[in-house]
Image 1: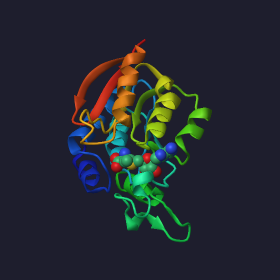
Image 2: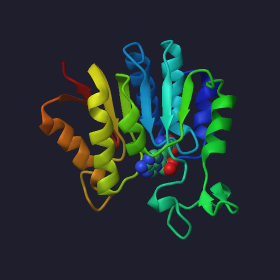
Image 3: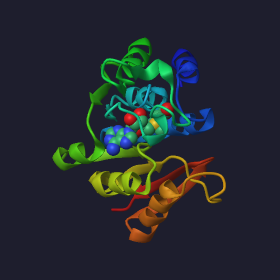
Image 4: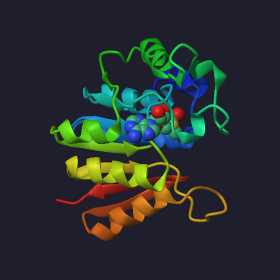
Length: 206
Ligand SMILES: C[S@@+](CC[C@H](N)C(=O)[O-])C[C@H]1O[C@@H](n2cnc3c(N)ncnc32)[C@H](O)[C@@H]1O
C-alpha cells in the first residue's frame, strides 16, 4: 500500500485495526479486477482509504455506501458519539464531509463513488454485480442481517464477502456480525478464507 495513503488511513477517524485494513486493501486489489468493490459503512473514510487504494491499483472502483447519520452507538449520549461529527442545525450526525476530505487527500475521488443512502434502499435499486462486499454498517441484529440479505448475493462467483467485528466470545462484542458470517457459511454459497483479527472473509462460490 502506498505509504502516504497508509499514513492518512492510520490518522483517519474510524473503527478499523491496521492489520484488518491492510487485509482489506489486499482483498480489494484482487477483487476489483472482477467487479466493483462496495463497502457498507464508510463513516469518515478509514476503511475507504484501504479499500479504495486497493481498487485503484487494480484500475477498479469503490462504492462507499453510508447514510452518514451514524449507527445507534454514534448518536448523542451513546458510547461512540463524536461531537466533531454533530451537525447542530440538522440535529443529526453527519460524517459525509470527513469522508470527502479523506478521499480528496488520498487522491481517491476518481476511484470512489459515494452512495449516500440507507443500505436497504440502495440494495433495492442496485443491480450491477460486485467483486467485493465489505459489511461494516449498523451492528444491530436487524441491520446486519438486512445488509447480508440486500448485498451478499449481488457478488459475482469468486467475489469476496468481508464482515467486520466478529466476536466469537459474546463478552467481547455484539453477536450480529458473527451470526451473519455463520449464516453465509451455512447457506452453502460461500467458502471461508482466513480471518484477520475480527475480519471474517469468505469467497462466493460459482
Ligand atoms: C462502524 S461505522 C463504519 C466504520 C468504517 N468502516 C471505518 O473504517 O471506520 C458504521 C457506519 O455505518 C453507517 N450505517 C449504519 N446503518 C446504516 C444503514 N442502514 N445504511 C447505511 N449506512 C448505515 C453509519 O452511518 C456509520 O457511519
